[in-house]
Picture 1 (cartoon, rainbow over the protein chains, first blue to last red):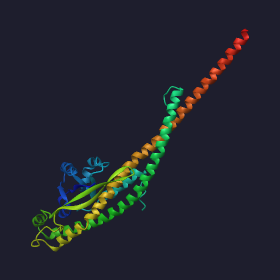
Picture 2 (cartoon, each protein chain N blue to C red; picture 1 turned 60 degrees about the vertical axis):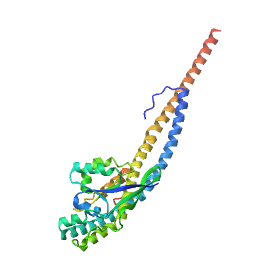
Picture 3 (cartoon, chains in turn blue, brown; picture 1 turned 180 degrees about the vertical axis):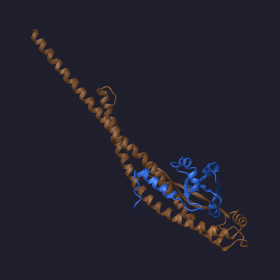
Picture 4 (cartoon, rainbow over the protein chains, first blue to last red; picture 1 turned 30 degrees about the vertical axis):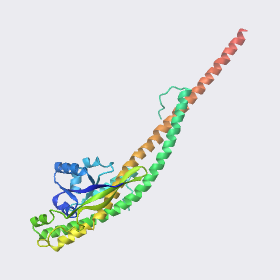
Length: 107
Length: 211
């Protein structure tokens, strides 16, 4: 059975512009409190939330709450200022959680 | 290893033996589950890494295109051009079960508007904006794939951690504890038996002496 959810993007105005153009629901924010509000409203009814790495860092504690829930999937992406390597960092972290040490490093 | 605080009786021994059986069974099952989860996780995480590298590179290019398009337009006209997207996209979510972990799968559909992402007049925009929107449009599928894989990998890693803790708790705490307690009860009962036997022999000697 399938259900329809929306797709959202959270971040600063320039970074989310490209997402908005293809029809993804946008939540603009730049401060921590704004980001929390955006996350809260985006989490209701969204299956996927794309979030800029900068904003992700601001509210990473709150995002962890959704880690073991099947929905929503919260996916960081590099903003307009360029990547900070957060996506890879998180990937390595989940390898470390699962395996105990990072075995992807040499790949 | 500490032994459990139980009274050394035959009843207790039976109970503990049953518990040990269950613990061994559970340990074997959980170990199998952990191994299977790990296998699934490894293939997922490799795919995830590739997808992320690809998506980040492509997204970087798309963002750059937008930046260039924006640089040639005034902020107002760029805002006005993209103010009302011609469509909105939704995700159709179905759930899949990987060794007891529910992971979502996404498929996108255009919920309203046209399939064409270009939502502005050509009068006060430029060709780079068209190119930027088109490159972003071609990325949607990749982004969804990334979301699916990354979420599945994260859910699996959480589950693996939980399962590993359970396996270790059973292997290094529960099972040794039960084994030690069972051994203790058996020894205690044997000791009691020997004690009784010796007492009987002594009593017999005393009775014979009296006669």
